[in-house]
Length: 499
Image 1 (cartoon, one colour):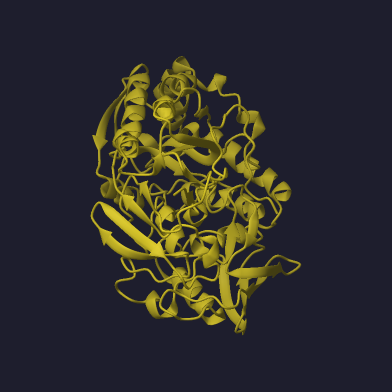
Image 2 (cartoon, one colour):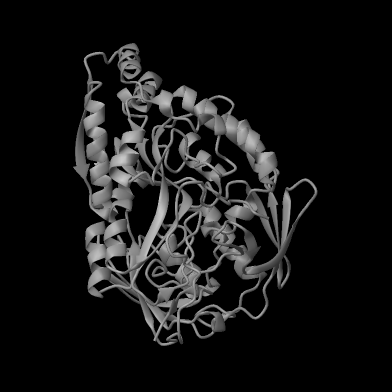
């Protein structure tokens, strides 16, 4: 079942990540991946949006999502929904061991899922899960409050991670994870995280490197310099670094995904509580100019969270030309009682690219009387501010497809959502969300999702999209095998390095 595939025209592609190395691979090699920040927590209940890059090394989920978005067996080898999509039965893979020697079984799955429901970042994600039952040592049954075909995607993300039962309640789990993943954490120090291959992994033969080391560099130019100088073997890059990376002889991969550059608004702020002002922000941004001048055309201008080619995308909204109208923005501000202009703060992280984007938006918004000041936060400050709602408006990367596009709706558009501190709500959205989550099939889910996106846009969205991002990464020669994922999953076990 292809649940999250993207087929975007015009994005281009460099050398594909799946190309094989020439000559023998080095099974003792350590991949050095330059990362933009330290992990927030290795406890799935406390993890933040960047953390999947780290969690994927040490943990596995019940269901596996391939880079294309296709769903495959993970810790569960097969699953079956009841006719009404309210009961999901999963058969577990046998012979799987955790890093501490414990065995994977249905009791371990039950304990993890029930823990996630009680507290932390996954509570709203699993709110629909009513009951977890052990059917047999290798079989577990999940009962949901509503038809929930979408949960197949959710269980391919953090909510489907199974932590070793003996470690789940340990106070040091945030820094000492115990999972079933292909790597084990060996060192967690400020500025660098290291992992070694887990020889007891059920599919250890498929991992062809000995470990992963992640040095941390907050800004994009420093990360690219680290790869050029040999301090790192690979890292994500920005579109304006593409030519530099290729000129340095690096292998560059690029592919569409479900992330977007956007402004997240705290609608508890008086000005941002006004729908007319939120719509003014929508119409004051020249997305085509930003895409051309900041991203060399690789960030697709958008007024919706879902990119072209993704089933949740609303085709009628893909032409954004009518959404740049400064005069209309001024009129809307007057309707909001802000005809003399307004002061607004943009919080932005330490990454250079987001500071540059914030500055471009600052210049554009000034033309309609929105006076923006930019406040740069440290990486962990930015994570905390977004999670706790202690911000006015953040300019950052948002993930619209992970673990499922309906979760974006839950988190950003529904009162009580994880990233909805102002309590934005709209009549009828909850019922449409329930409808959009009932089936496994994207064809049945598209219509209610499209209606949600359209209604929110018309009401003045709490998230102002700017453009849909193209994933890019650069590697030194001889490093291959990392497949870019449409929803931000990472699988470093597939990486190959030449001797």
